[in-house]
Amino acid sequence: MSTHYDRASLRQNNLPQRTMRQTLRALWKTVLPSLFMVVLSIVFAAPFRILGQGELQTGLVLGTVWFWSLYRPASMPIWLLLISGLIIELFVSTPPGLLLLWMLVVYGVAHMVRFHFAEGGFFRYWGLYSLTVLVGAVLEWCLLSVRAMMILSPSALFFQWSLSVGVYPLLHVVFVLGRHFSHPSDHP
Image (cartoon, rainbow, N blue to C red):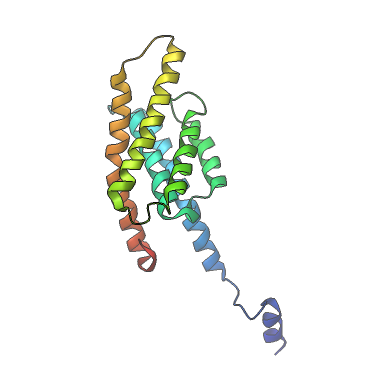
């Protein structure tokens, strides 16, 4: 009977305590998107000789940040975004800090528009994502032009933008289906 008393004394206001399994599941749901980005960045850092491999790496990372910041912000806390962004910076070919800055801008825009366009649907959010990626692509193109001390071809800018925008619908479907099958009760 003293065991029952000890358990009851652990509860405050008669609220049940979280089990270890629930705590680990919540932690896993929080860490998974950032872990996905880091693993993708490491895989795409390998020399596969895929045309646009670096641009695809950037597009997948930004699409992941956009989706999780927009639809499940609890799974993409800012501190975890910063840590994963610093790790990802080790595996990208962009100027140092640029992708992290770009990730933070995408995160901020997604949080800002989350409730303003609650009835917007996929195409409105995809349009906003494409504008955000366009601004980041122009910034990257300008910085790379300054670093090369010449104006680079704008075709690289267009390629970066179109690949990042084009890969997002596939990412969106994969993430929605993944959430649906893993947690059927809390999908959008």
